[in-house]
Structure formats: structure tokens, C-alpha cells
Amino acid sequence: MFRRSVTILVAAAALALAPAAAFGYGADDYSNKGTVSDTTPDIGQQFTVTAAGPSNTNVTLTITSAGSIPVSTITKATSATGAVSFAVTLNAAGTYTLVLTDTATGAVLSSQVVTVEAAAAAAAPGLASTGSNFALFGLTAGALIVLGTGAIVVARRRQGHSA
Image 1 (tube, rainbow, N blue to C red):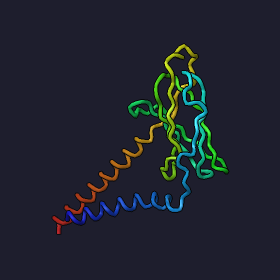
Image 2: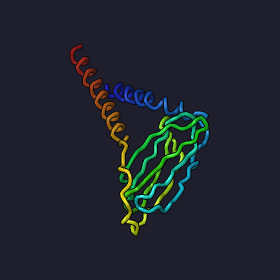
Image 3: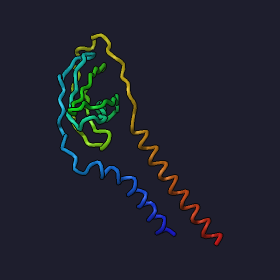
Image 4: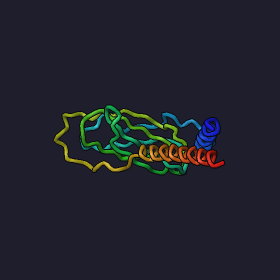
């Protein structure tokens, strides 16, 4: 009974990971193909983050502050040539990591570090941070897999007792 449950769990994990392996096969290397127009902007100063990636695909820019605290997540589609550009404004002093990922494959296209100086604190406020946190979707998917596996195990045990 236990072996059967483990086999089902392994098969489910293999099926869940199979599309990721298929997307990665034969992919071009787009790693570290990004730039930042200003690595030391002032508070409220807009700067541009650009990258090259696969054409006509979604790219996600994730901005995190020191200690891996997510600040913002923005998704945009690349052009037919694979270029993508994000206009970013940071409203607090600190060191930020800007990571661009291909949403289809999860491949990191670029990782940049930007330091916003505290001396410019009197600058006018910029745009509000917007976006969403994709970690919630991953946690939800994981929880559903665990619940589904548990339901299968309980159903198999009940079936075994009734026979």
C-alpha cells in the first residue's frame, strides 16, 4: 500500500515537471543579457531595466530589497526581436536586486543590483509599487498536490478495508 502511494506521488511529480523540461530543451542562452540605465539612482528617480530574451514571451521583473523582501513584480511581453524594457522608480533608500525571468521556463535572463542613496530623501514621491507575488501560486499548487495525494491514500485504504 505504501509503495503504491509513493509510486503515485513520484508519477505525479514527474508529470508536473515534464513541461518544464520540455520548455528547457534546445533553448537559447539568454542569461545575463540585461542592463540597468543607472545603478545608483536617487529616491524617486526613474531608471530603465532592459533585457534580451525569447521573442514574444512574457518576462517577469522581480524587485527585492535587502534580506530578500519582495518589493514589486511586473510582467511584460518581449518584442518580436526579444527585447523588453521596464521603467522603474524606487521610493526608499537601500540596495535592491532586480531579477528578470522568462515566465514560461523560469530561466533567469538578468540579475542586477541597484543602490538607492539615502541622501536624496527629499525628492518628490514617484509612482506606487504595483504587481503581484507569484510565490502564493506556487504554495497553493504544492498544497493541492499534497491534498490530492492524501485523498488518494485515504481512498485506497478504504478500498482495501472493504475488500
